[in-house]
Length: 69
Image (cartoon, rainbow, N blue to C red; front, side):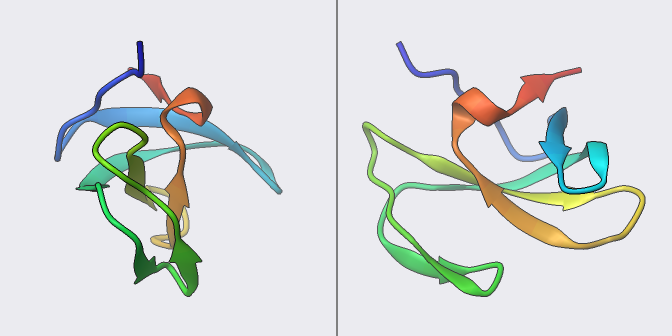
């Protein structure tokens, strides 16, 4: 079963500079443009737009890449 996150959830993930911590901004459930790239997503395979606390940058991750804090 796919992990589900909600807007405002605090999460951590691995980034190029090590571990990042931030907030879920949005669940993406259809193909769209986000964080500067094309995101392939569906209701069965969502992705999540997150914002880093440290850099303020936004990224999109699959649920298996995120850990709820």
